Image 1: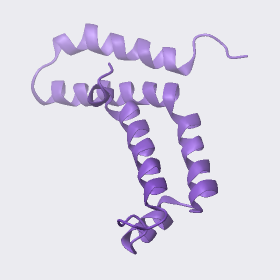
Image 2: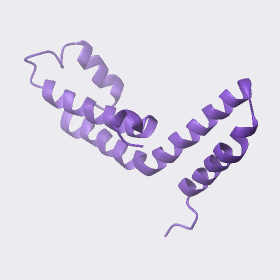
Image 3: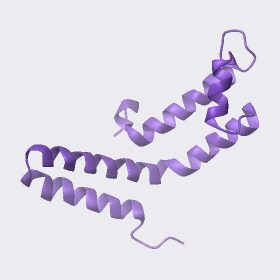
Image 4: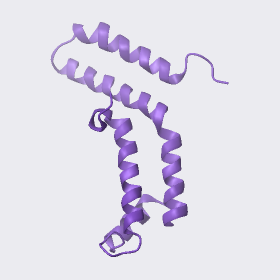
Length: 116
């Protein structure tokens, strides 16, 4: 059983304080740096919310369905033609890469997925 507040809640609170209380008081380079920190906290929150289980599932899929231990192994096989038209692994590889891209965008930039 998780204790309250969760790490995601704490990050949200810190992000809200930075955004609403501190950001309006800073200018110039410091403001830009603070916006980067606020964005990084948002990414960490989303990774806690979406990340680990989904990425684990994709890793399992890559290993069991496609037979690749790592993304580097998959990349090497792609360079050797495994994703080319007519190759029997093409559709599986494309499906896996779409899922990976979708998951990464959900964490790093959900606005690109049409979600806030």
